[in-house]
Image (tube, rainbow, N blue to C red; front, side):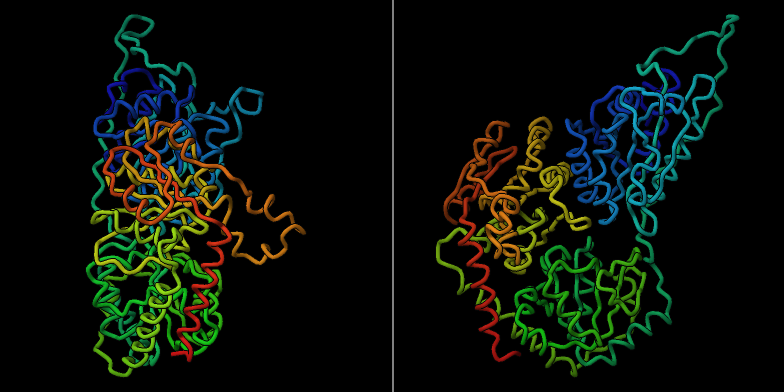
Length: 593
């Protein structure tokens, strides 16, 4: 359980105890970056039995790698760095982990207090470095030979695991000062007078943590369940909106069964994990909600009187506008971890309960009154998908074909990782329901393009088959992560949609200003670079494709390791297609259902 380096002095005894107990409590993976002050942590992690270790070059990428691994495994992951700005580079991923509720355990080495503020090298103020982005912060005293602090190490491990997985999971920061020597050495066998050194009092090992259920799971208050059911019994036009959510299979099935029985349309984006699985065919699923509600007449005509929101706020702006338009509809937010994720300030009733438990406890019966309402949504869904297909130019390499090809290439239980900006929105618009079990992954907590590749590689390190769909700027922003992939022999497919810059800005009002705001230079960061040679420079298998058949052929190549597929598309053509496609949907839905 513990590293054999535990006998190498006070620093190593403390580190061995802390990391050994964290590992025993459920943190089975560690991501670390090299450094001097963190040597006790890194060396102990590398030699702790049963702990998988992923060395990384760059702290920012390492943090996102750990985030992807943490979310894919749904378990705490250790993230280790040295002192100084190394820890500061964790900040973007820590913010994302906080908002996406991922239990990262940050073990940041530091200089001891007496060296801080006196010009010591590689020293910054690391106390409360991540502010409110962590669930808990603690700083340990520097271990010394007379007091190796083993009991404290055990207590820190237990509380860090608890705080990171409590009511609202998230990152925990342990600041760990170490004095020199920073290398393992045999303990002095005798004291100054020649007598054997007294053995430290034994500290019991931390027991393996029991399987944790999410907050609110288990028995649900009967009065709450009846009150919840009564809302749906009275509603004539109920709708379920599922935003980004780490839905497990039991909860996903419970939501879909609930929607089916009550004839409540289920507006589910890919990140809800409710758009893929064998349950979709029997669910009143509305996967084209973003396209449907872009139509002003449809958004007005499809007026709900009750909305149940599950997960985080939806990605789709059209759904947000629709909710604002019908502010009189009661909005219930169901969140097993609690928290107030409500950027529109629309929620009327917050329920903190595990969805499967609440929906199982809520008495209900099939309702004929809502069948016509559900049928209107389902008719709009069919017409919207038909219009999207008809609007797509034959043979052109555009987002719908790219999204379909990426999904088709994934095996059962595969993961489609998505960059923020256009990739996640294209999946929202063009990813049809899948009857296979698939998972969608995107950093929609802080919504940055930071660490896109590293997050996907972290998910791949869990053993899942992963494909990443990203734009050219997101790829360039984290290209150093390719170094990690080669060293760790990870298997992952990266599909780059290269539109020569930040294509998402073409879809924003600022694009109309053109030269008045130096749009191409300052917003799109326009370029004419091919990224295939860059990927090859990192030792990746890389190919450029020009059409859908070439893309599918490249995806069918079962070569091991990291594959990069660059799809070059014309930005203006892509922007025109998006406008034409959504206009075609609006036209197909007239008159509004």
